[in-house]
Length: 101
Image (tube, rainbow, N blue to C red; front, side):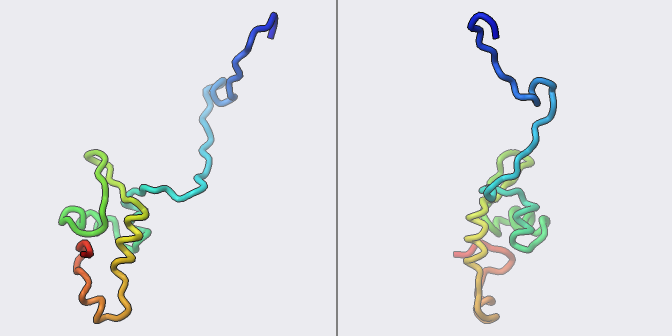
């Protein structure tokens, strides 16, 4: 710096066109894609897709023609509403992934 000039400091990855390093997330994402949602609740992605087509299963958001996401908290709530302590009680739950009332 000469004669009181201020010089802009540019990070190295921008100076040389390098790729930024991705930092690991410290918390769980709020919205998750179908693959992670399926893993989280123990079903296949095709089961989630069938439930979406039939209007059953956990609530989801369709962000574009090809992007579907699930709210992780809503997914956990949907699962917790389907907990049963006996097979007789489980028989009264909605069949085929239908939304719990």
